[in-house]
Amino acid sequence: MEGKSVLIPEDLGPFPMGDPNRAYARYFTGNSFLSQLCSAGVAISNVTFEPGCRNHWHIHTAASGGGQILLCTAGRGWLQEWGKPARLLRPGDVAYIAPGVKHWHGAARDSWFVHLAVAVPGSGTGCEWLEPVDDAEYSSLKE
Ligand code: MN
Image 1: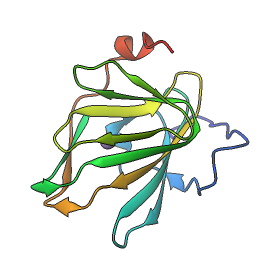
Image 2: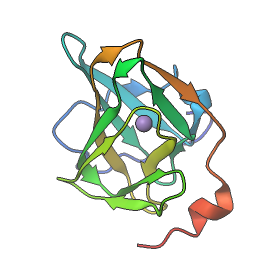
Image 3: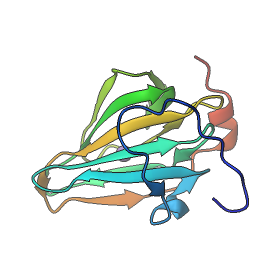
Image 4: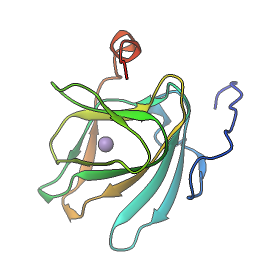
């Protein structure tokens, strides 16, 4: 949120937008918002990305189980696994990211993007944050 005004579109889906995502801001390009919806049993967060915002490449690590499920609720965005083409995500789309798979997710250049992030239960789960998504590669994504 550093010095940049952020326009809020009318419909960012049914879940609370939450607060500016300060805790993970260093792992994101652009502004995002985070709302922890549920922490008992299964951790579920609502993540809102402003246009152009995406997280860095990262890996959901686990000794067993783990991984992440994304449920898109509003806007348009991308999910890309390392070595694969980026996949466009729209409301109603569901994506499973297996543990150990390097990937990023975030908004399209010209759209807000909102997804629920479900942490698949497991043991020894964590997240390894890696390099930012290359600007030229991101800019070249086409729907
Ligand atoms: Mn992820």
